[in-house]
Length: 589
Image 1 (cartoon, rainbow, N blue to C red):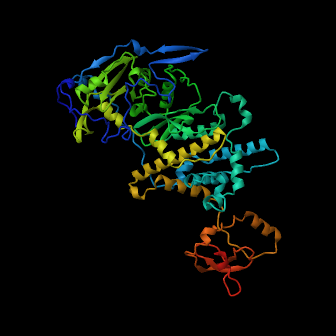
Image 2 (cartoon, rainbow, N blue to C red):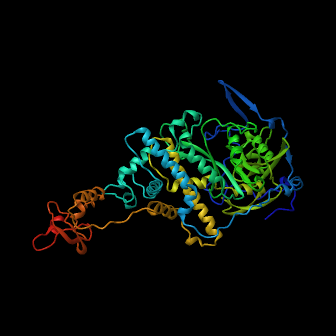
């Protein structure tokens, strides 16, 4: 409930508590507690922390002091905040997400991104690369077979085996993969999978993503055209990779410490609208000021926002700076994000120990005007202090949030500023995207960096397609129980890519033919024989019963060339069983 009639805040502290939790349980980590902003340690995941930005020129490091360092931060009294925070500055949501006319199949969402033009480009470049490597061989890869290749890769992400060749082995054969494409053909396509002409690399020597550039440009164009929700986030994700590459980053605080870094613009559910692969130094866009590496990334990704005044942009303390908030305000982008004390030059909040004396829920608000933009910062104490800054919102209204008190052993209500409550609504985003991708990640090993990027983009497209599918189902009022989850959606896409528009069927065995060539071709493309059970299984004397089947097959006992209609119900093999032969008994000894 909003607190609209109260005394000045510092004179009426909220209920005091010894609780050390940010949320409704006893663990800060489990509830996404925000790290303390008084912590002086640096984060290795980011290139700089914006107090003063360090830039290296010719081996000499220079520091660019922010213009905000000379600005004076004014303290905003809580009782004066309603007058100083006008509601008209809060952006109103004027956009409307388009409703779906009808439900579509999962593979149709996938093909919106991997369309015929992109698949044709990949097939042509792969055929060209094969000819460049060996003029005497031809890959002959077409669009249909490339779809089958992607479908088998998606099946492999669902049914994961430790070695690639085990999908075709007799012991662990996966029909959804082995029946679609032979092992040698799969390895040949993987070997020559290519996306750009190497002969043009010299003219684009500065582009470190040249070999994957057609895929990146095609997906970016389609991601940016998607309808956008009101709340958007910018974060970074890691593509796991341990091979040799100049683009590889080492981030010791991440679950995957080695890999490629990608900056992503997405909504709170994880739907990607734009991305930028980190390739080294990030220069500002033409006409924009240089506000540091991560600040330039935010400004660059914010250009993909449709009608920025209708959206809210969030980022964490790894990107935030006073200069960034001012730059986004100049472009009309309402921005919000957590910051650290060192990133607010000239601004000093009370220490956590002093705020704890006033009680849990205490907050302080300060503001500064930089380049005509008013920037507000609010420090709120829950279990620890957290600072949230914004170029459009402040603590002009407060509410009561429920928290667990460890000392009193029951829930208590704590005062919470509106800017912090708005920050809590942005939880998810890139972390939700990472969780969805990691649930069934494609794990095809390759030393080529562009292969790792391609498979990651396939995972990203599947997640985007599923989120769009869920959005359309919600607009059509389809019950959640009838909607496909991500695993069922992924399997449906893989099945459609492998079987749709392809001649795949179980061929019945025909009687022997005198045509030697035709018999040879049938034997050549015949699948591997059924694996025999181990000796321990055959001799356990449990559940081995003869069953009569309609199909007659070769007896599986060694040195026996007879055919039988009797089959072991447990071993699933045909064995002779008549008055002249008892291969069934010999097989199970």
